[in-house]
Length: 123
Image 1 (cartoon, rainbow, N blue to C red):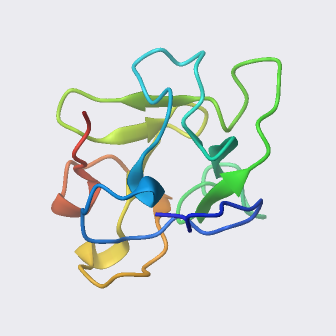
Image 2: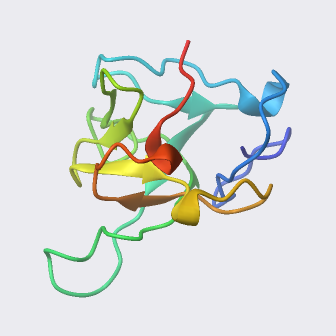
């Protein structure tokens, strides 16, 4: 959940569901040509340095300026049938590391195993 005044580079983190504006995302759908947006910015996972096979695992998720043409790394998200949210470029899922319930834990990309920290309420 980014703050109510989103900014480029802001971390996307864990928070208890309360229906606040910070938890509302636009255009988050199965259509990978639509970006997952918040406050005019896009959900993004940024590749890390290292071997290609590992550069996405553990990548922090944050808000970034939306780019075109579609899909770019920010726009390439899909909601899987079990509630996981997958980044289509990395083929990894949005993850709450350690299945934390503590507010403020930054979300990352991890393998899609369907564990508790990867299942999201989407609707």
